[in-house]
View 1 (cartoon, rainbow, N blue to C red):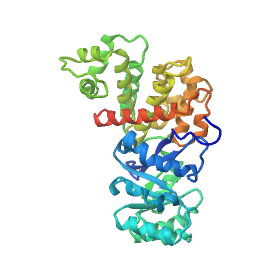
View 2: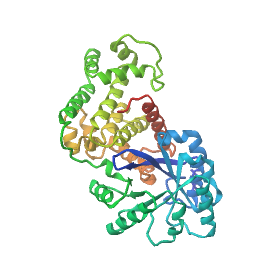
View 3: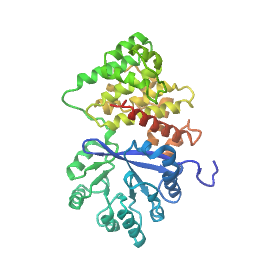
View 4: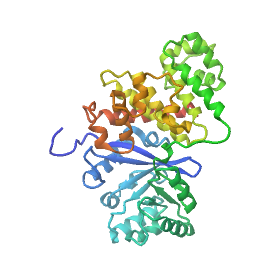
Length: 411
């Protein structure tokens, strides 16, 4: 790559869920940069934004990136004034205006025009009393950084916006404690890493979780036979149905009638069916938590698997399982060490999931950094020798997860 500027071939796109109080994803904020050195959506960030609205949207399909939900897309001042938002249909996106956009007559007119045409705007990192107050009449959402704004101010802002019918999105909600107080303060939508934080669950479901853990453990025993695998699958009615469904799914590229579970397993093969059955088991383990956790685990698993193909001394199948189990603590509501206790992982995989440095952990760290938009950290990993590797893997993982979802494989 030339040192004179960013590689214009690449736009890095990741996403972060925006959830309601019940844990349902209502949309995804798209995180994007033109290259690993871009840290703000300015200058080269304008290039990234324009490319996102053009190349990335057309190549990956917006509904693949967002799984058919609303896209929250950041607009810089220049992109706002250029009318770039009108490249998309109003119903598919919300356009976020950053708090550092200078509010003048041109910006006001652009917002007025977009709003009157049915486009939705969100005021990002809104601060009460700031010049962005003038944009409230054109806003459909307001986002507030709950780390930098005092709780009483969040409460007052939520009440004021509720009177205007404007939902308040709490940003940087990193813990379940923060989720609880922002919900009580009047925020109705939430964005942050709190969904990945382990939380102890009470009530029923412990026995069910234990059964799924036993099944997941058995599925991944290295010496399991086809007879044993068939018996395990047949014991779970939902799992049996999904094995049959997958034969005619585009995700598996096998289209024919089968007469038995055994025949379906033979056609799919031992490796693939163990992998997909593990995905389904993990999704069922996610009872009591947000479905976004299962989605994130599947994305990580697939991205890790694809990256491992280019890494020496890393088995893609093992890397898939590491990615899949990387949120096991949050799903099971137990510390990671306890959540992994019943799984037949290799010692290296177990250490990687517990944070110890090794090649498996390096791949996992790169994927996790990429998914939150930490481009420099992700792309300077020792095994990332080509800037295209991660965006291609993540994009392919998104498409795979979308196909899996449309085929009704996720819980």
